[in-house]
Image 1 (tube, rainbow, N blue to C red):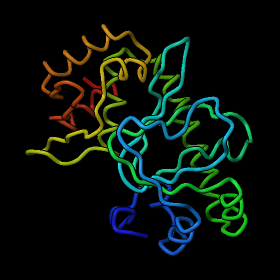
Image 2: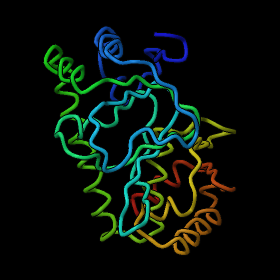
Image 3: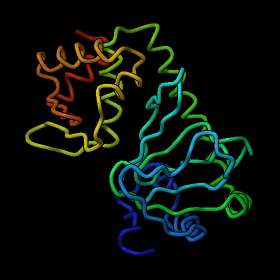
Image 4: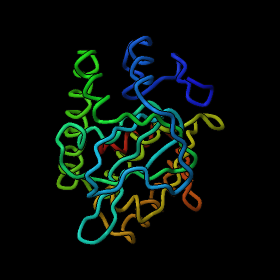
Amino acid sequence: MDGADRLPGERATGFLGRLPPTTRQEVLDHGRPRRYEPGDRILREGDRDRHVILLTSGFVKVTTHIEGIEALVAIRGAGDIVGEAAALSDQPRMASVIACGTVTARLVTAEAFGTVLIRYPDVARLVTITLAERLRWANDRRADFVAFPVEVRLARVLVEISVRFGRRAAHEAVAIDVPLSQRELATMVGASEDTVQKALRALRRAGLIHSTYRRLTVLDPAGLRRMSRHVR
């Protein structure tokens, strides 16, 4: 594994980070190195290819079309696996995966992925856990649409993104390195862009976040977490 492809043990996260180092390396060795540039469509919704992508650096956006609109449904980063559902089900891709900045990865063919699952039961078990966690996350978001106002739904999404993809900034602030438009945030929380714009304005007034064009910083992580729990 070359330097750009390395996942140091203390920083390994996501799917790969939950594997023992030796197994992680074995899994990566079954893939071919790939590099993607900003905006590259790594996987395309509806395609019938079945390879799996193991992300080793950078971020990607997972999108799907809902009533003609391309909606952002998830963000994945270094250590994550994408494309596993099509590999396992032999069904068309359910979503597109788009590079958000420069991304390095390992491309694992469906055949090689099947070999890994047979040879390493702990990997097969983790794939099952990952699919279950993603299903639960999607169900939680649907429940949020019914239970909480937009401000709270937005706070919940921003907390999750900042925990996984944020970095420490000045004082207690956490900068989110993934560029996010208001339209993308709107599709994630199931609201109109105008409503999300108002919710962002309310979070700024409360001193919880700072936002500029496609960039967000969580100024008060504890306060945003309280908001996400609907605690005033």
